[in-house]
Length: 137
Image 1 (spheres, rainbow, N blue to C red):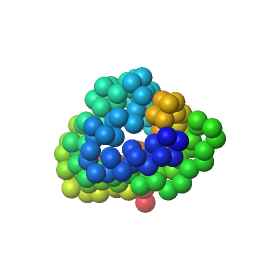
Image 2 (cartoon, helix red, strand yellow):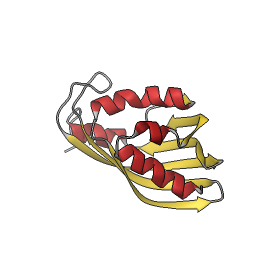
Image 3 (cartoon, helix red, strand yellow):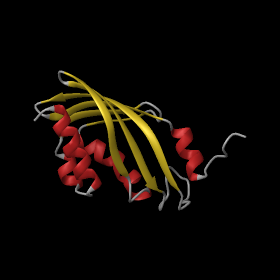
């Protein structure tokens, strides 16, 4: 499986809420780093533990691929993440508001699986859209 097929399979499974299938696209020793939050994980189990609170807070969380540049086993991908806050998120109460956030990830693949991902996203914009911090005037 080439990297784009892996990404598309992940997105499709994730958006269908088939998380077992989505996580099967990750290598056992998959490494994730979220630059904006400083969060990281190593392995499927740690990544799942990182994602579970996010999915509880945003049960309708979706990912929409917008484009990618592929070079061998490396991919730079742009995507849009969106969701509605229905549960507590990092100690912040649910607002019922939605966010839409443009994101970018640099990924490495091995054996048709995600091996490493460094994700870049704008948490300030997300917090403003959710009503947790005021928008600048």
